[in-house]
Amino acid sequence: MKIALLGGSFDPVHYGHLQMAKEAVQVLKVDEVWFIPAKKTPLKDRILTSDTDRLAMLKIALADFPQFKVNPIEMQREGTSYTIDTLEALHKQYPSYTFYWLIGNDQLEQFDLWKDPDRLVQLAHFVCFDRDGKLVQTKYPIQQFHMEPMPVSSSEIRRGNKLNYLDEEVLRYIYQHRLYVKDFIKERVSPKRFSHSVSVAHLCEEFAKAHGLDTQKAYYIGLFHDVAKNLSKEVMEPWMDCICQENKKYPVAVWHGFVGSEIIKRVFYIHDDQISHAIYHHVLGTSHDPYAMIIFCADKLDPLRGYPVKDSIACVKQDLAKGFEMVQEENRKYLKGKGN
Ligand SMILES: [Fe+2]
Ligand SMILES: [Fe+2]
Image (cartoon, rainbow, N blue to C red; front, top):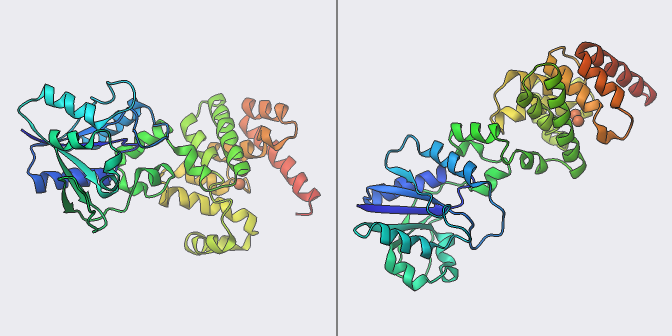
């Protein structure tokens, strides 16, 4: 058996990883590619997403490729995951197999920093797939092949960019298990707005629970409701022209609801009409859909706003329609007081 090994954090696994595995099958004519998720990566400090979640996402992503397997050998070993330990163990376990270890040219550049590089290249054929067309000078016997560039990285995905480079089911898993999603917002709004968004998300959940609604849906409405809040007028204008030009008559401060309702579809691939609808109406409170009423109330009754909200929160939990009207009325008074 000829086996290509692809190590990494896979936090999360994306199309770039899959492309490298496909390339290995084509170029090296291997029988299988084993994805080896690290327990703890030696050259990075970041705390990884749980083993369970990374493993689950890998299994989902590889499900359609019979030649691609997950090998959890590093996750089963405590401490830092050194490739040398993995290769020694695999050699013992599969003495007749030929192993290829796949790396990218960023890893080739720092190959000197790997533990025991001289022994590593004896245990497996190291193969580098360069993604940017540049050959790296190296003293080690490492073959280099060019691979069509796929401009994506796990870190970009963790920040909520390029989510279209994920398997649809992996993205569903991410949302289901709320992985990275707070960072999607943290990346895009001020620290104060971020705290507000998280706080509103939790209040939305509480309201949904009180009224027998979908708490997960409510959480995401709360978390994403102000995703467009920190965008400038110049950035929002093309979105407004494209989605609801007629709403440009409203003050710019209101636009982030309209723009946010579209951003969650086009940037975050959340295609749920109730979520979009609720975010669209959250500023003006112009919808009686239960989720729209929930976000309108939660936004105005966020405990972080610093005024007494306990009684109003209890009222919304008891009777959503009545609570909604009360919050609307309070909001009207507040805006009138401010001359709006
Ligand atoms: Fe808002
Ligand atoms: Fe808000």
